[in-house]
Amino acid sequence: MLELNCSYTFSHIPYILNEVLDEYAEKVIADAALQNLHCPVPVDVDAFVEFYLGLHVEYKRLSYSRKVLGLTAFNEGYVQVYDDNTAQPVPLYVQAGTVIVDTSLLQKRNEPRLRFTLMHEASHWLLHQRAISAENSFFSNEKYDNQYLAAKEGRIDYSRLQSERNDSERMERQADFLASALLMPRPAMRVAYRKYFAYYSQRPTRIVRGTGFWHDSHAVQLPQYIAKLFNVSKRAALIRLEKLNAIVDQSSLWSK
Image 1: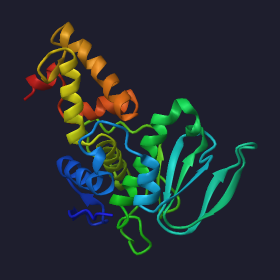
Image 2: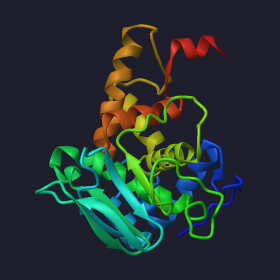
Image 3: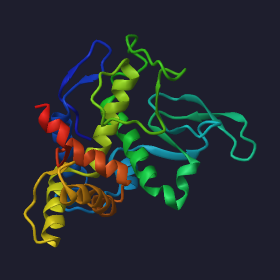
C-alpha cells in the first residue's frame, strides 16, 4: 500500500488539494491494478479492498433507516448493527481493518453504489488512519459515537464548492473524491473521452451546458457512457466529469 505524502491538520486529517489526490490515486491504481490506469474498464473493487489493502468485508444492516451505507473499523471493538429480520440492534465484534457494508447494497440494481461505497471505505483506510486512531486525542468525530470508526452516510454531494464545517465533513469529501479517482482514473478517463467523441467523428472538446442543443445533449449522454464503461452510477460519472472540467456550466465560464 502506497503512503500519502502531504501536510496534515492539527487533528491529523490530510491537508491536500484534489489535484494531489488525483495524482495519488493514479499511483495507487498503477501499483494495485496497472491494467486499469489507461484502460476504461471497471476496477475489481473486491480484489482491491480485500487483497491489495488487506481489509475484511462483511455485510450487515448498519442502521434502522438504512441511511448508513458503509463503515470502517480502524480499531478492534464492538459496533452496533441491526438484525435484518427484526431490525433490532445487536452488537458485533470487529477487528481493525473490517469494512461493513449495508445489506441493501447487495441488490443487483445497487451494484454501482456498492462499488462506490466499498471504494469510499477503502479511501478512508488510505487517507485517515492517522486521524482515526486510538492515539489521536485531537480528532473530534461529530457524527458517530465511536471515535475509531469512519462511516458513509447515504449520498455526499462532494461536487459543491463549499468549506467543510468540521473534521467529519472534510474526511467524507476526501474519501468521496479519492473513491471517484480510483474508480475512474484520469488516464483511463482521457481514453474514454476520446473514444466517445471518435464515435461521433468529432474532436474531443469541453462540454458547456447552456450553450445549445449539441452541448446539452452530450452533457447527458457522456455521463451515461462513462457510467457504463466503469460500472459506476450516472451521478458519480457526472461529478467526476465536472471535477475534471470536461463538463462545465456556461455561468461558471462567465464568473472566471
